[in-house]
Image (cartoon, rainbow, N blue to C red):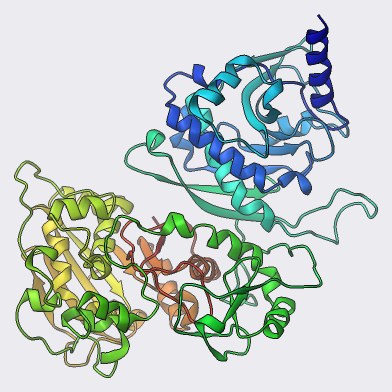
Length: 631
């Protein structure tokens, strides 16, 4: 009896506090959820531990409601988001966790000034972090048998669905597998963005200890664990907003094209700065403030985000005061995706800090199509590199089995286009060794193919019907010397449909403008020199517009092209190398009145070779991320 009373008293002390909450855990156990895989349970615990480490309860209170949208409504049972409103509890006492509600109205009805109000017939999903010693035996057994990751030193999440009865009692049930997928996506997304909320010092009661935040909305991409991915899609766009219902706003023209749609909170003020040595490069870097060149080993980078390069601590402190303090949180979140974005399957060096040395290490420097991968041939106009020999020479003289031959795939059992999920499938299909670096150049044609057959439904349907798809391909540069690689688009069509690619841009040489090339039997490329909005009226109407490594924020000429894309109403897809470039590009698109209908997503056919920007360490890959409008 004494032991029983001690346990009860400990649980009372642990669970009962001055803040909102619904009391101790109910004894639900994820092992009892129908269809759940042990690996998914591990993924949920890992995501919950990652969220716990970001300590959202330091600033967030139950009154700070968040809207959550995971993918499309049609992805979920009943064709609606299961729990689209969320609050964090425990920041001022009581249970530590978060509650997910069926609606914002339910959340407001149950949120009192000091406690959670029991409202009859309202159902919510809650995630509370409990000390292991106070958990029910079934959960302790599950934690031990699956070696689940702890949140903090000894806390673990308990997830249940709670309904208040008319009599004021609580009834509990296990969440369904679909509800757990929703929770997982939320935890992954909110871990990245909650620290980016910016305090609004103009709003709220003057002497209140609860801060108000500026309206906020951001979309991030979450990767599903393999065991719960559906329909071949391993990524989902998750939108977090505060307050709920917040929508993306079109910015006025006074907002610069390079600004991002989200404001970011200042990190804690400190009198001293952490100087962190630059990393991953022994070449020349450039100070983000004064633009002075500095050797990589002598460079410094921000000690918080590790993303920005400086020549000295003086420049670092000045840059912090000028601009960096508003972006440091964003950059930190982007840097934390380094490991996720790196494609680890390849056996060749995947970092090109110094392109010439990287090419030399592979024995392909100044050879064939690789001449466009460094600056040694920058004097030669795009599309006019001297061509010698056959396909093997174009691929730099690498071994015959290391590059794709201009021939169909050796598979007679499939009579439709190949739908590929990434490089591993493509290399297996082509029987290429993972030591072959051809993915760096093939990123361009395979990204085009990925857009046409996976991201854009209308072009995919045309191909499946054996018809032709017309692509307006904007701003070609190095691609003009990589035409042999685009033969892979035709081979992947596998005898069904055709693609006409009209490449339009100022870098097309005058003597090539107006020419048409047949690349294999199913791909035709037309070259047009000029600005898209000027030349478009002379071109066949497109089914889709594509611009790779677009750098939308860098060129004023994009304004007219985007106006044309808006008036045409056709799907348009863009890629860019880094997440910060994509954030800037999103604002450019919104300024042009274009709604982003395909959110920024890591491109499965991005180049595996990491680029180095002189003044930044942010993960950067050719065709790294893809996003779209009018889709």
